[in-house]
Image (cartoon, rainbow, N blue to C red; front, side, top):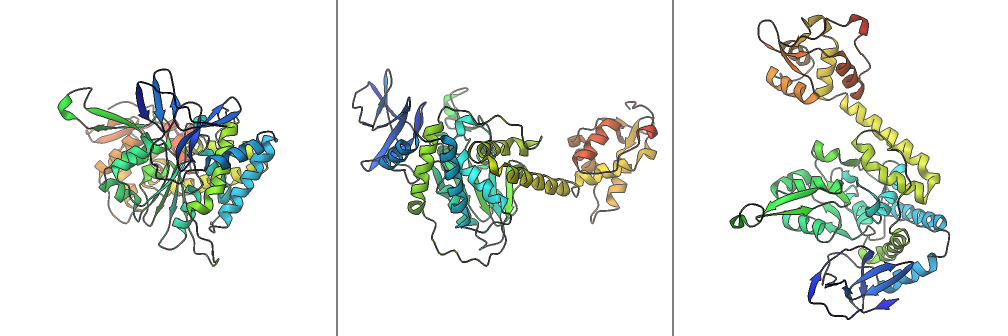
Length: 433
């Protein structure tokens, strides 16, 4: 249904989203609103509320889906069984990604398909995993990222991380972002946009910017909402904090020859099918399932698991097994970290505990026996504090930690360390120094 809605209001503003909006679409060569009213879709060139008329942005940085095509697809699918239509769309996304790039793990095609579909159901999720493709040059990172972002909800391909536009595409436009830069984290630091990048993984995250200091308190600062689906491509390792907000895929060399170019125009018909998918599910919840892991990775991957349960439950086992492999890899990595080395040293120092206190100097000495360079007690002490150990003092006044067997055992398990102190050999109860 088409409706130009030419009614006039005292105030006219531009906006890219409101309740009931399916998406911005191309209509008569210009952006328009595609709105769901009941089970009907209507195209509006302008939309009026009680005392306000809103207009779509005059220009957007992504290829708009064509209104007539989305309407045609929606009207053809709305009467069909949702599970059949969703499964067919999911399978088409798998085929789409396989035709674009070769991924290291077959299950990663499910990861990409579910990621794309979840971008069209953001109202139903709290987290969105940041997918990072990492490798040396010419391994297919850009091509793979384009294959995702050109079919994602409002997908925008950027080759920089400038603060001004990164804030605006999140706050004003609600874009899915593919940032394709040589060194993602260093580029973000140089542009002072690291907080806007880090915040994209969780709904409700806001970053402040002081825009008018002369206006004084409460009037000088604007808070930008930055949540949005994110894909990264980088030739350099990313910061650990950023990495915990999603998954990193290390791209491998391929012998396959991919002839077809990846462009927005070629991907447009699939994007239009996905907008129709969004229209059918707008206002509905995703299946309620448990997180695939208890940590942050479980939070960010849960929406993808929910999408697979919704669209292609037959592929759930593939995804769950993949998540298990990822978690084992992360446990192996944690077992090699400095924090793990410190915990492992503590596990072997129960004999050095006196009056419930373990000297930091003893921990430092044991840690340094297995490292290529020497760490100071100050550095070790900071890590111990970050791990949650309580500070204490020895009889001669040197720094120590309180011996807490329960905390040590819990930390050992979290870092994948099998050896744990025997409860029967617990030293004397802790005494604060």
